[in-house]
Length: 513
Image (cartoon, rainbow, N blue to C red; front, side, top):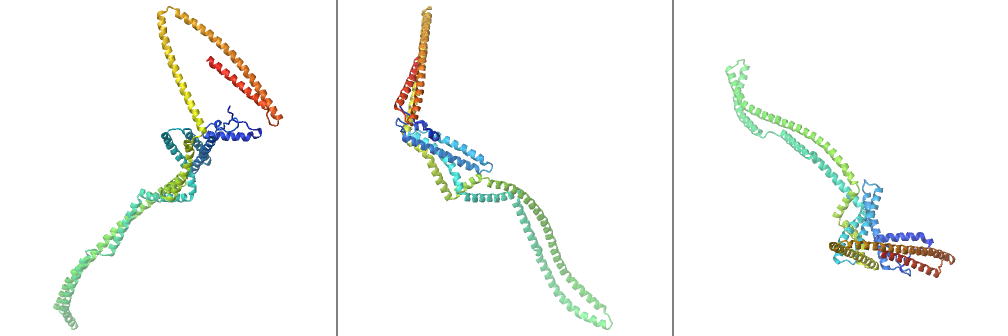
């Protein structure tokens, strides 16, 4: 008879209950009944020593993974600005329970005696789940160990976004195009100023004509002055003697008119040069005035665009600032950028992920590859249950087929009898039913009587067992904790009698059925 030692001394009942509860939770985590792991033989030695340590260790790993996964999920949620600390803790606990259920379900679905291709397929999807669980556990440790670099990267990303925000806001309001227009107008104004400081391009030709004209006039003037000089001397001499000469005055006037006629084209050439220059100045001043008006309009448009650009950039800047302070999203983006661009951080993440993935796969690999006495016991129980279910199914199928065959044969026989019989069959059936009913009442009466006797015997044995237990307790008090071996024999004999009574009742009920 195999016994399980569950009773503990009264002084250690509290610690024993806690130990039992802890072992039950470990066995539940490993998906194994605690009664199997704690089963002992008559000498009090654990029946499954190696498997007991294996499954308690697997249960510890499952609890460890669940706690770390819950911490990782709580840490990720705690970095979100919209979730409170209690909410993060609650979500972490829920995730830990989910991870515990997931690990336990993976262990339940593992069979160490399965075919190699089933093991390979099972390892593939279980490995994927283990990798996802490991990433949940690795993330908070990676973030906390690189907090300074992540904060710097978040600041850089926010600054880049702010710069892009300003540039996009300027493009949205058309500020770069307006600035190009302003630059173009300013360049045109400078060109007009340079043109105002210079002369028209065709003015040199007019100046050259005027110069040539004056050069010709200088030659004519020199010749006329040579003619005028003696005439003027004669006129002055005649004026001194008070004898004016009209002919002399006429000659002098004729020479002066000739001089003025030769001088007039040169003066007209100078006037043409001045008019061309004045016309050029007026034209350029008009162009400059138009450009100044255009510049004023462009400056006004630029001022309006700057106001719009400022409002757009400020509204978007608040969102960018909030995004940089959002916690999880900003940290996740910074972690992704670090892992993508920093070889050292990438190696660190891969190393940690490999380590957590390896310890995550320990329980699965141990369950897959290691076959212990507990595994053999559980497999045998499972095979026996499957065989029993298969046998019951086959028996039920055979009974159904037999019943159908009997019903078919009975229907055919009844049909044949009714065709040949003129009422005798009905009378025989009535007599048979009456005999069967009488026999059934007799068997039920016997069964009732047997059950009553068995119940009375069972009550008697139970009362004897209570009396023996009381005697045992008194003997323990008198003998300072020792128990008389005779009392132990009486207990065992009484238990055997109770079991025999129960077996007799079971046989009687089975026989009646």
